[in-house]
Length: 170
Image (cartoon, rainbow, N blue to C red; front, side):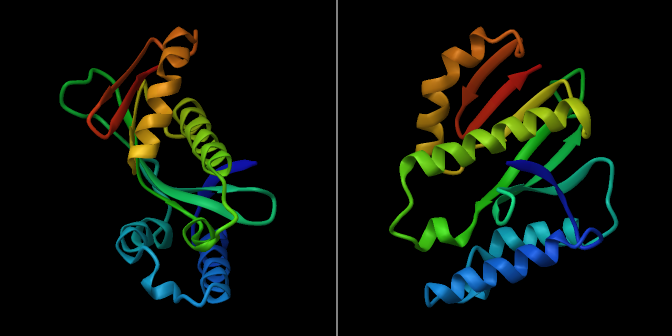
């Protein structure tokens, strides 16, 4: 799997719209009705020239775009270094409409998005701290279960959950 920035400039933003529209149609749904509020937040970031502090990032499986999110990095009150935040995580419409999706499929995507975000903090949108906005109770359950392993990892100096946010210090 590949986690990378998508934009109108590199053609991947248009690919997302085309492919996800097709998926919605296959399930008798309209893409205009699919997660329109999140997509409208992502659109200006993907359609304007790339910035060094924010962007739209997606998870590819080689053929399809499985998930997309907003990443932004900034100095935030209470932190001495930059913080990378993952917001507006959105999975492909097939995860909303298909009856064949398993919990394992969802966990795999969540894990890959997490790993991609951590890599991005180290390689592209440099940050010492990472905050992930959890989308659902299942996300919270997932990170609660792996929090102990994350805390014991040499990669992270601190891992905590507060409300719907996972806080990580690198």
